[in-house]
Length: 89
Image (cartoon, rainbow, N blue to C red):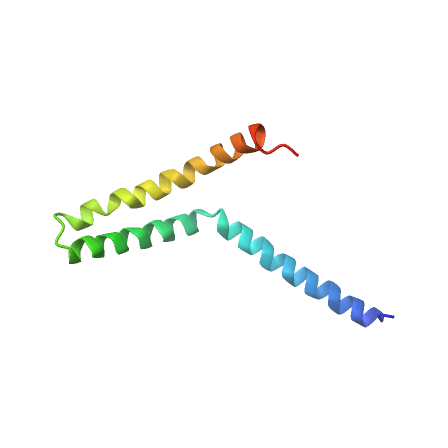
């Protein structure tokens, strides 16, 4: 049989886990995450275009970064449509 102390430790572990899960969920939908991914995408594409001698690599690399941001901004719309018309539980 578990003691009160054991149960308190378990509750504390659950609370700590819940805090981590909440922080992870907040990060997944945050603009900070989207901006970081767009920035990394921009730099990676620009460096690739630079190495391959593409004309105007820094200007051209903005296209996929903006595409990423636009895709992320429209995902909630499509998610809601999916929930409404396809996912029926």
